[in-house]
Length: 455
Ligand SMILES: Cc1cc2nc3c(=O)[nH]c(=O)nc-3n(C[C@H](O)[C@H](O)[C@H](O)COP(=O)(O)OP(=O)(O)OC[C@H]3O[C@@H](n4cnc5c(N)ncnc54)[C@H](O)[C@@H]3O)c2cc1C
Image (tube, rainbow, N blue to C red; front, side, top):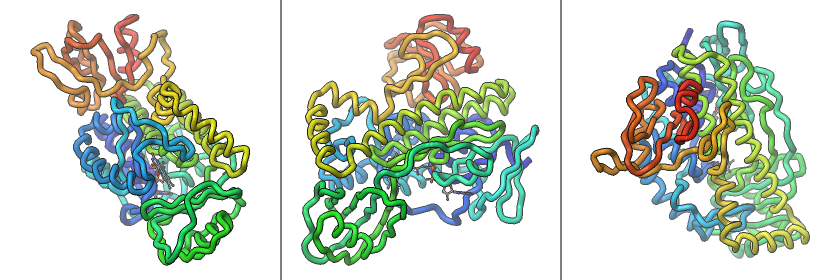
């Protein structure tokens, strides 16, 4: 065996998963095809749940530092730091559960440092996967690697997904966008919705969205100028384009996230449009959910069947994001009928309760897992970063008590339990938290059942 778990893909999800596995006492091996980390500026923000997941592992200061410039860049490029649903920039940020504005390459640097000590082999593209009763063998280059488990974190075009025979049903792209940091010579048409698409220009960013034709548009200065001409009817001269991106809004999800010893996480398990910036939130939460569970099975604390809870909990979370990104695509499509719908939708977002509904929808904070024992809310939800007042009156935040990656019991009275860390609190009711920050018990029903289920 070359490790307990082979993680294919050293993007953000693979790196975080590897760090979580290590923390849980497993030996991960990351195989990454690129020789050096990607500098592609895809995501520019982390949702609340992913932000809290990284705080729990002590990365809060680094995220806060990156957020200063990230927020300035967001204001420059979008003219607003509000969130958006289908480019309707009205979503009021939830200050109690903040996002982090961080560019993806910066996030990957933070996560690579966090995963220090994990064996990460670059320049290894996985091209074959063989699974048997004892383990999984993968081929990368001329070498084979073997471990008990394999997790494909190899992105939207996942080779692991195909090689291990996962289904990937969903919908084809309705829209295509090309965008980048652009220098124009001369006049630029106004940003806005046009009869056949949308042209956006703010700060140094420009982008065009058109109906997808099946052919993926190139991202060259000429291709961008041609697309702007098709949409706005105006001829522009594009002198330079940097940080170019091209993306469709195809929405697909693996039919299961586990086939025997092989798992999928992140974009390998689900692809959707980047509208609302939810991909990393979803993917990093997959990693947070799977890491400690695999660790528990590898340590022998839990039986293999425990790993089925990964699909059971994370597949619905993926479905929810596919649903709302499809809805956003419908609102981004060109046409007079959609213009009317957008106007009405904008009016709905002016209602504080509706605004909060959409903020929560995008951040996933209302997401709730179904547990195998009856338990009322907030059991099954991700716990926010609570303030904690200890027995001695000392104040701290929840994330200061979660670095070990173990379960955590917050209690005024319960005695120590070897399965979890126990912290005395005086300002909140009792709570049992899983290592992924999910509330497993909140004072109602037997604590022993919750402890035995997860630990
Ligand atoms: C334009 C754009 C804007 C976005 N904005 C946001 C945003 O604001 N917020 C947000 O949350 N999300 C956003 N996203 C989505 C986000 O970028 C992805 O969800 C995220 O990159 C997924 O991370 P991942 O680790 O699953 O996959 P990836 O980042 O794709 O990483 C996969 C890794 O696997 C490696 N790999 C692939 N195949 C193999 C192989 N066969 N063998 C070995 N290694 C392999 C790749 O080289 C890569 O390093 C955006 C995406 C785009 C395109």
